[in-house]
Every structure is written in C-alpha cells, then in structure tokens.
Picture 1 (cartoon, helix red, strand yellow):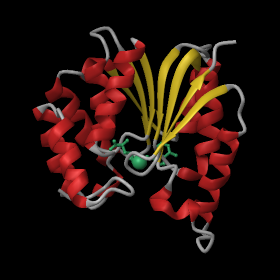
Picture 2 (spheres, protein in one colour; picture 1 turned 180 degrees about the vertical axis):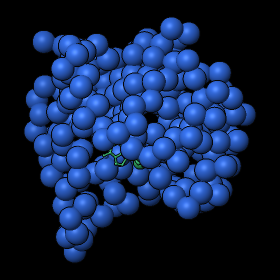
Picture 3 (cartoon, rainbow, N blue to C red; picture 1 turned 45 degrees about the vertical axis):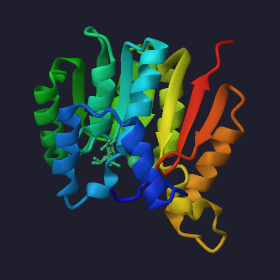
Picture 4 (cartoon, rainbow, N blue to C red; picture 1 turned 90 degrees about the vertical axis):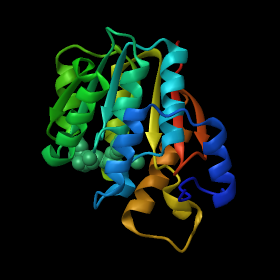
Length: 222
Ligand code: SAM
Ligand code: CA
C-alpha cells in the first residue's frame, strides 16, 4: 500500500490500515477506479474517510456540506454515515469527475441523500446563505481550490449550526507549510489560512496530521 499519510513509514501506514480500516466494498471499488484516474492524488485517504464517517456518527449529523467532490469518495463515506433522512449539499465545478461520483452514489444506495450543485462553490454557498440556510448544517468538509479556502471557511462557518463541525483538508500541504524555502502562492495561502483559523476564537480547534493534514474546527456554542 502506497504511503499517503504524512510522517508515517510505509510499514506503519500498512499496519494502520490492516488493523483499522473497515472500508465498505463499494468504497474499495471507487478507490480502485479513482486510482486509475489522472488526478487520482486528489482523493482523500480511506482512513480519513473512515474518521469523517465516525465524526458524523458521533455528532448525530443530519445535514452536511461538501466543497470539492471529485469522484465521490468523501461524500460517499459521509453519506453512508448519515441517517436515512440525512442530506449532503455537494459542490463541484467538474461534470466529468462528478459523473463518476454519481455512479457510485447510486451503487452505494445513497444518491437520494446527495444534492450536487455543479458550479463555483462560492456561488452555491452564497446562494444557500441568501436562501436563509445559515446555521442549518451539522458538518462541513472543505476540499476544493485552496485559493478560496478562507472564503469557504467564512461561508461554511455561517452555514454551520452552533456545535457544528467543519473539517478542512490538506492544511499541511505535504509538509511545505513548515518549510521556509517553499514560497509558492498556494503554500503561502495555506499558511495564511492556517493562521486565520488558529486566531479564530469562535472555534474549538484541532489540526490532525492524518493524511495531508486535516483541521477540525467546531463552531463553539455561545
Ligand atoms: N473530496 C474529494 C474526494 O474525497 O475524492 C476530493 C476533492 S478534489 C481535491 C477537489 C475538487 O474541487 C475537484 O473535483 C475540483 O473539480 C473541485 N473544484 C475546484 N475548484 C472549484 C470551485 N471553484 N468550486 C467547486 N469545486 C471546485
Ligand atoms: Ca484533499
């Protein structure tokens, strides 16, 4: 198994998966198909999907938001963990990637829980806010274009209920955030984003070193 969790040896990563991964068959099939895709690296790791499913169950979440669907691995993990009347509002711009996701949502029996909004996610989130959907979501997963992370964070924060949880992916950016020689635009943007979240006293925070770094930000009830 190829190592895709920062800081773990290949052997330790394999051990972790062998001793904890409980991946439903349909997710294994999706992961195998996505592995042949030219953008395969965009998919979240299976242990991260399992963690997100656990968090959704722990919270008793019913409504979830996803920004960045790709071939549907994270949305399928979350949808399987939601109750029968649960719902995901899923955002992506790419019809080709999400056609694969739609196929697996059907096969996993969760298509009825997922509403895909094809278009720039910022527009979708602003539309949800304009419709009066502030504070109606329990869980939000942010995993799309990094340049908009701060904007997604601000909107998702408003859309979450107090006590709702936001998970933001790739916050360690393959370790580049901690390497001062890395001064490219995306790395600087992620550093600034991490600082913004660290300074936000409206959230209870944990940055996990799972996969490529996952920030959990709980909208602290006032
Ligand atoms: N969460 C996915 C998974 O588990 O496989 C991976 C998401 S992938 C890293 C990022 C996705 O964001 C891509 O599918 C891309 O089409 C989408 N994306 C990029 N820019 C976007 C935008 N402005 N609005 C919505 N989606 C966007
Ligand atoms: Ca990601």
